[in-house]
Image 1: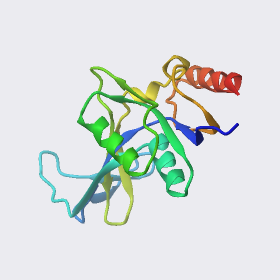
Image 2: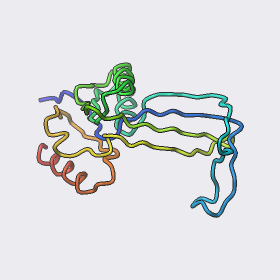
Image 3: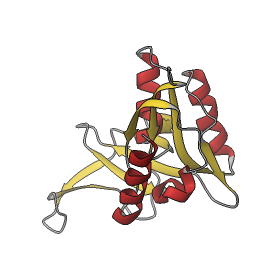
Length: 173
């Protein structure tokens, strides 16, 4: 019997705002782990040369990429009940990714990243992790996980939750 999906990706669904500017300054400072930082004058405005806003995150990126390669995919993640979740839904539909497994949490904000890209291509990412950073067995056990493969992406930093999800998926196999 064949599965409904070739691959289901479980993990993060975010909005990425990528900002590029020749005016972003890269400064050397031993106070930063890498020794470098993107820096702007406090209280100033900086001109942006280009920007992109789109969906991102491990589950959305992988499910869209695999769908683009011809696989039937679905995305399991948690989003807020805001305009950004609608943007993610639209993007997934554009790539023909199954959206029935997206979980909407009321009164929550969808994960969001702002990515500052320096003239040399280096980046600094500011992240609001949102509800997708805490995917648990409870949050996925009612989902339709009829698939040949599961691709686990970022499940947050709670390794007990990640372990529960993995054991749950193993039991379903």
